[in-house]
Amino acid sequence: MAHISAALASNSQLWGDRGVWHCDGRRALSGRALHAAAARLSAALSARLGCRPGDRVALLGLNTPEYLVALLAATDAGALACPLNWRWSDAELAAALALVAPAVVCVDAACEALLAAAARRPGCPPFPVVRLAPVGGALGDAAAGRQPAAGRPTHDMAPLLQPAGAAAQAELQLLRPPCGGALIVFTSGTTSTPKGAVLAHTALLHQSMAKLAVVGYSARDSYLHAAPLCHIGGLSSALAALLAGAQHVFMPRYSPADTARLVRRHRVTALIAVPAMVEDLLALGAEGEGAGDGSAPAPGASAGSLPSVLRVLVGGGGMRPAVAGLVVRLFPNAVVSTAYGMTEAASSITFLCPAARTAAEPGGSSNSAPSGVCVGAPAPGVQVAIAAPTADGPNGLCGERPLPLSASSPGPSPVGEVLTRGPHVMAGYWQDPEQTQKALLPDGWLRTGDLGALDAAGRLWLVGRAKDTVRSGGENVHAAEVEAALEQHPAIAAAAVVGLPHSRLGEMVAAAVVLRPGWAWREELGGSTATNAAAGGRRLVTPAELQQHCRAAGLTAFKLPRRVAVLAELPRNSSGKVVKPAVKQALLTRSAL
Image (cartoon, rainbow, N blue to C red; front, top):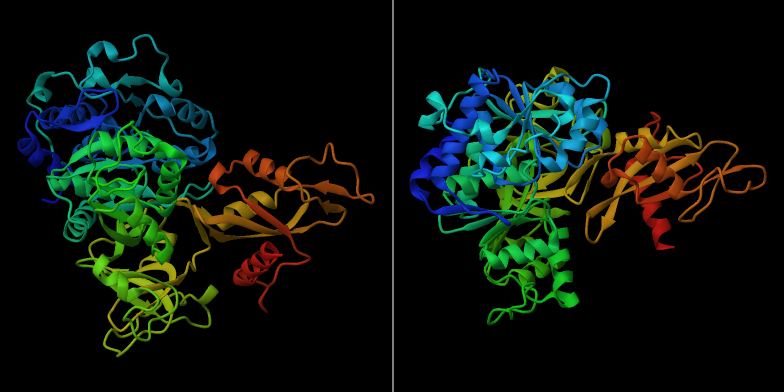
């Protein structure tokens, strides 16, 4: 029976008493210790906390061994594990908690204050808390005398891991909920309608096997958790490395200096990255960090490079040739693959491997290649198709019930909406049948909302993000959420948010706004309407004030507009809808002035 926790059971025999999970300042954890911890926590969730198959167990924490143990324990008890983003605001977190109504929330010390703030929000449901603690720590490490977390009934993790009764046998249960789901992973953190994609055990294991086949993770690897485990990219690759029997190196929070240090200290051979990470690490080397630990670069490697790394998976879609050159400088010995995917597809839909990259670059061997960025061929067992746009579809998308173009058509396909089908596709959005019906077609195709085309070799080329979403620094930012926050300001009559190219983040959030009568714009870094002098009898508003307003409205820092421009009116089509490509062009034109 397919179960993601089974990988821990099988690898505990392979690892034995060897230290295989590493986290700074701690003793490395052995395979047997990890297996016992997950089994005992699973038993405690069932027997002591009343968690039943089909219940939800929410997780809020940084990248640590105990976080991944808790996730595996929750799924082993038959619950749906719900990773929550620690970068959310308390309003976003409260909305997600209200949606999944968790039977238990597992939280670490770094995120307790955020959970407490969310728990005070109206509508946040009641729940007991398990306070995460280092696996293998002494019973006295259980934070004796601390106040209950978030004002809720609280259980420290360390006592739950002590042998007691049947749990002393430390055997995994491998229970599954009636729906077959393993995880509910959130696609975004909106304050009103967060969407949680229900991913089955089979979908996650299929993705793991695809990564083993394409990226080549093995038991000889040392895998660095550089991506957040609350994101599907970090989770999917972590499960693949677990299935392979690799060693794990945990980095609680990403930082360039810690990444370089941990790679060298543990001779990391595999990791996933986004273009912003690559630029950060190269900048670190250029600033004279060198090896980061005082040692000289390895023979044949430049200062700041990471020659121990042999496998890199770059997420976030296609990789421009300029970025590919940076990756080679940073990881001179690595095989670099790129992936295009989404939460609803349990991670990767396509992979672009080194052998195919040359043909997919300008001047390569591809004939009649579509415009855009090549993101490679479908993952093993994954189908990709293009649905032609129709007159009723917004922004070039197909209509309500799209049909994929025939795969037998010769030559490249026209541009249309990208569809995918296979065992990797989500079961649906948790408690949201309306959005599920919009995303999943009756014949199993998942609508990605992205525009693309297939070339003659079957590779997918992305033309743009038709979904009204900005992908900034690895986070999805929904334009409608930022627009709603901007339009709550008394100066703003209308707002349109788009993504503009950014050298480090990929895209940055930018906004075009229309001012209400009686307001004037001042292009400066500071100031507020309370202190600005009137301009011809009009009140003044500044970019800084709008950012402060959006933050007060509940937007997380990465969702704040980095650039704001005032337009006399927003470009609209004949039906009155804002034309986002025209907004983007107007902002780009102003940037070039």
